[in-house]
Amino acid sequence: MPHFVLDCSEHIIKLQSPKEILMAVHNAAVNSNLFDENDIKVRLNPFKENYLVGGKQEDFIHVFANIMEGRTTEQKASLSKQIVRKLNAMFPNIPFIAININDFEKATYCNKNMV
Image 1: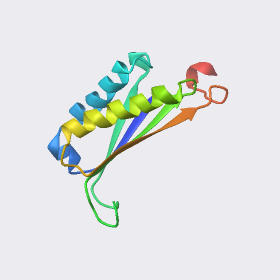
Image 2: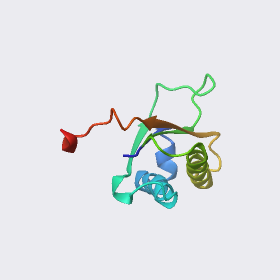
Image 3: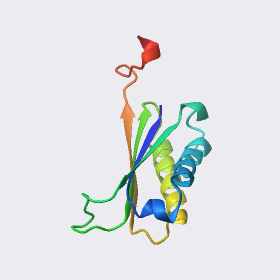
Image 4: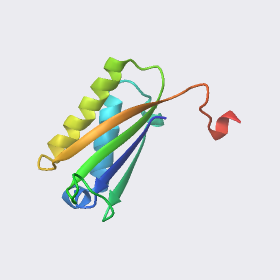
C-alpha cells in the first residue's frame, strides 16, 4: 500500500522508458511524505489499441491511486498535483494526463501477512 497504476497509450513508453516513468511516480509519492517508501507499488499498463480519448486514439496517461484511508483531502489533492506536475514535465506534449485517488478501508483491507 499504496498502489499507483498507470494506464497510458503505448506511445508514452517510446518517449520515456517505463523505468523512468515508474520511478517518477514512485519518487513523487515518496516526496509527498505520506507513505513509507518500501510500501509504494507502481505499475504501468500501456495500451497499443483498444482505447479512445475523446472518441479517437490520442496519447494519454491516467494514474489510478489506491491508498489507505486516513489522509486529508488536502494531502490527497497535493499528491495528485505533484504526480501530474511531474508527468507533465516529462510529457509536455501529451494532451491528457490525470489522476484519481481512491481510499482503501482499513477495516476491510487484508494481505497475506494478516491471515
